[in-house]
Amino acid sequence: MAVCQTADSVVSVMTMTMMMVHVSTRSPCSSSSSQKRGMCFKKRRTVAQASSSFLDKYDLILNQSPLLVKSLTSFVGFGIADIVAQGLTLVGAGGRGDKEGSRSSFVAARTLRFAAFGFLLYGPASSTWYSLLDNFIFIENPTSGIAVATKVFADQIFWAPCLISMLFAFDLAFDASETKPSLTKKIENDLFSALKVNWSFWPLFHFFSFKFVSTEDRILYINCVQVLFNVFLVYTSSKREKNEKNK
Image (cartoon, rainbow, N blue to C red; front, side):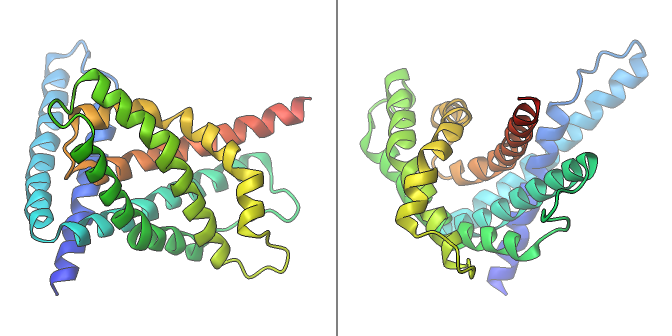
């Protein structure tokens, strides 16, 4: 029962966080009508207040069961991120016309697999990693420029390759095809290209994370950004396909 209540709270918090991102990224309240401007600001204030309430609830259950909450946060975050990625891919495929042999329907097993990765591996491992960074790197001034830059560098050079390799291993473990590559071959062929994409997106968000986000809330923040990262992956993949067609 306690686990179910914790999971429900995590889902609620992440939903409200997504709403905050959506509202804050919409066009400014610049309508010529004062009434419309008032409604716009009122809507943003209402969402902000609700989000604050849910975040307080999240912090409460986080203090009670930190590892479980971070793992469940990653379960929900990775699941939502994959749903968004699959949805965008299917919409794009529909616009271009299905290719022969391409997937044309939502794969729930893939979403469950990514969610399981978040719960079993990413949540616990990332929680430990970010705690180590905050506890051992410039602890006397953890948000200084040099401290933040060092943490971002360490994260992208040391942790990112480990995380991507873990994801490769987890994905291959569920791949039943006879032609699947070995983990060594997969890392050799795909790790550097995956890192280049990672390095083109994450450093800016991690700068914000290490500068402004507490250690306790970092897993929640990163899982929300993970949804944007999957949108970015789908966009770059689509752009790459378009460039290859134009050659």
